[in-house]
Length: 349
Image (cartoon, rainbow, N blue to C red; front, side, top):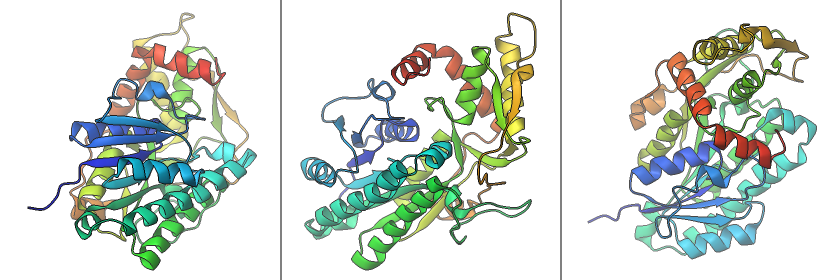
């Protein structure tokens, strides 16, 4: 009888996407070890209700510390390692690129090396079970014109310090498979949205600003296009890659929901008008303001995830972006305590 993968180690597991994946993995009866530095967009509030010794353990520390990563792996002996930990905000990468290089490149190197050391000492049976999943982004592919989509065969052409640092991590992951035969997979996804996203990203920022009667800043003319995937759909794809993906492979996950930034903001405004109208009787859309465009702002992203559908059986639960967006707005409205805690801790109130 073949062994079953039981315990997984998730870096960045207290972040937006990582915590969503932890919840999904626990639902599928995996034992989970969360590794997170809790320094920026990772919050204990995202995971505190699921922590349970022996079922869901937490280790505080950074992937930039090789000794820490290695010690956690040796302590918990995971059957798989998933690296969600990353610096991920483009604006922050432009103003302070060093942290992105340290986390997304050096941190990934540390994870790969620690896993290589651990993997080398495993029994043949455990080696057959082990996988390393590198979670990446579609931004490594650069920018699209009016037509076409990114896929697993698209050449990398990153345009920001953020995307170039993620590309660097992806290249390391690929090299560790081809050089050392560490069973690595890379996943690339489009823009995520959903509950518990740090309120600097477009959707939660617009929701929070609108509710506080603040301006809703939109870059340039707002016509830049993004493909939006609900975080739960993305995490389901990553779980499928873990369970069914081929070592050395790459899998793309998209939302099949291309929207201009201004359309997304207008949808948020329209939904808030219906469920929590402004006290002054005006429309939330009157708060929209156009600001100077981001340096090197990519024009359009879109993902073709037909390979993941064919090889992994990937399917989207949230097939209509507007429905998922409404549910996301409702979550923030119904979880104001979470938002207030996060913003207070980060000095955003």
